[in-house]
Image (cartoon, rainbow, N blue to C red; front, side, top):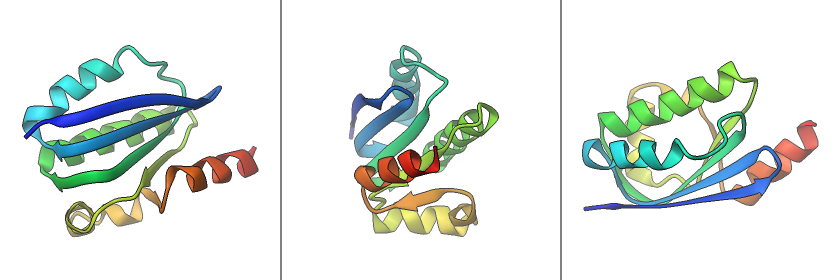
Length: 115
């Protein structure tokens, strides 16, 4: 199965990454290539509403995004995460690392109020 990727700039330094499909070894490499063309010094909201499956490569991708944001003093939010991917992150104790929100709008609200 493939991964549909849509990237939007919501604000000057806030990007929304909407994913739909499987976040796995087959889809992470093309995803990274697509992201390489976007500004890197931004807050990121990753909308996982359409992601039903995630493997270790998907987890590694999310951790990499988190580390990049953190090193730049930016935030990363995971939005709309489904049951299976959330359980996978919990098994790795990553539910203590990531910030989860119900929808991208709420993450944007939190970012605006933090500034």
